[in-house]
Structures are given as structure tokens and as C-alpha cells.
Image (cartoon, rainbow, N blue to C red):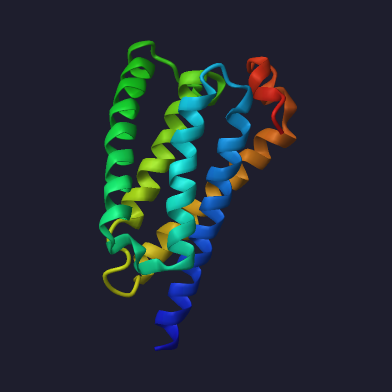
Length: 164
């Protein structure tokens, strides 16, 4: 029984950290030319993750599911369009291109919300929690890596360099 409650605590902590990450992602969009769109795109998962952090069974409420499913549907369509564009233009260094960063951010929201779906039905298992920990660590490490290595950001547009 202790293992289940420990997994539940880790799950909630991961959701708080992802809420923090998506909130930071929302904030850094302030300088973007199409800020409103991307701020909503990150703010919705930030709020949904915060709800899970406070009350994990919220994923079984109709309102949480509807908002999450709508966000998943729109984000998945945008991921498909951006992914096709990256593929068609044969872009390999995706973090050096605006579309690549947008694709990666949306893909992260899609994967995370899919991981969260129906997590309130039963106690979270080891596989879901292990996946959550790996996914939670990745964006913070990547952001720190790009923040420390200024030469990686040298070709980015100015609105990507000035928020944080």
C-alpha cells in the first residue's frame, strides 16, 4: 500500500512540475509575433496539470475531459501540419527553426495530456509514473542546456532570446 501512495505523490509532483513548465512556456511566448495563440496553447495544459496535482481524480470529470480532448484535437492537427512541413522541407535541426520549436512544444503537450487521460480512474502504476518522471525531467534539462549554451541560440530570432 505504501508503494501506491508513493507513486501517487510522484505523479502529483510531476504534474505540478509540468504545470510550472507549461506556465513558463506560456510566459516566454509574450514576445512572439503570434503570442496569443501559443500562450493559450501552453496555458491550457498548465491549468489542467495543476488541477491533477491538487486533485488527481479530476481527470474523470466531464469538464476536465472536454477541455483536454479539445486541446488534444487542435494540438494534434497542428502537430501534423507542422510535422509535415518539417518533413517536406527536410529540416533536421528542429530546435533551430521556429516551426521545429513549435512542433516540439505542441508534441510535448499532446504526449503529456495523453499520459494524463483517465489517470484518476485507478491508482497510477509504475509504468505511467516512470514515463511521467522521464518526460518531466526532459524539458527542464533541455531548457537549461539551451540556456547555458548561448551559441545554440545564436540563430534564433530576437523574440526567442529576450523573454528569460
